[in-house]
Length: 505
Image (tube, rainbow, N blue to C red):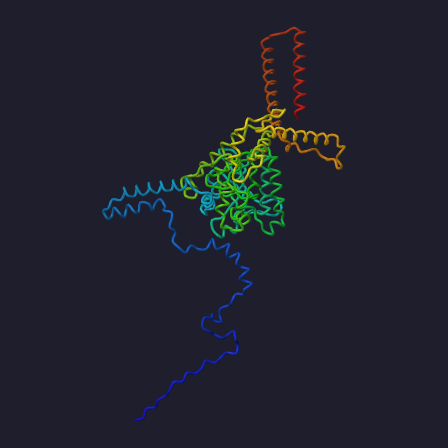
């Protein structure tokens, strides 16, 4: 029987005339769209921004254990007849000791990372936990409301405060809504509106700083970001009520200072305060963001350095392990510090309040007017302290006689310039307005002294009035001439006091 044999012949796959439909090895199927290069480049910056907030792909090594979960290990051990109480206690003590050692010697860059921790308490967390009641207020009366800067009236121990602060988010959605804690110009105008409201009704102002800086986008610049910050700086020095500012996270540049011109400036133990972010500083000075650690040390942004430089007045302590590990343990210290400083500022008059705020910023900073070779600051300072010293004719101390003569020459030049301003003969364009009094050195001390003199005079007059009333009730009379002489003497003293007070004003 014959068997028919057939041979399979491989037929070639028909070649498509459309080159887009050709499938080759190593090339994606044609049904997947290919992104264009320009679109890919255009979206890189946004993807880079959101890359920090991608879903977690790895299991966290420092997962938080809830209180009701802690006895589970003991329970499992007891069921198996094993006593692990002593071992657990030793491990807890060891972990506590390691945490204390770690946080007691944090480097500046590590403290910056703690200040930026995503679980760190935000402004609303603090405001809702330290107050008896908090009511948020909205709007800048110009059609805008910035969620990145929250304002509201708070009540603590039956005392009303005006609270305002930068607000960050917990996740990507909240951060986009809050603009990552970077206010727009309308946010600062909203804050100024409520600061004026507090000044009108006598509410103390408390500001909470937690921002990497004011938003520097195109829209913000078009709406006047620089003007809004400048107006806040100017207006805050004229308010009559106490202003207390506390840095709870990171305080960056003018965005932090726009609500930070206060009588008392506090900072939490693991917060930072800087004129520019360490990354931006490293990119400017060293042309590389890898030098951020070096820039962090040079900027002196830690609380200890800020208190030493008199930028901050007090460090608010945090629980062991920072505020993000125990937020409820951090709130009482913030509340106590706010109330304590408010009680210190409460007795001041409006004039003294403004003068105190002015002098707080006048005393910030340390400078020396002499040239020092690089790297020899300590040696030069030690040498200058060993010099016998000299004094000017007015009694000003100087390390050397040459410097004393230089100080006298500069003082003489200032007197000559003041004489020119008085005569206005050698000036082509004479000034149309006098120099603002708040900028004259020593004016604030003069204003405080004048206010104290006025208070003392009023107290003295009150005591004299009370003594005269008691004398009349007791029937103690005096001769007419003697009474006239005494009244004339009192009249002369009162006229002298009024004239002296008028001169001080």
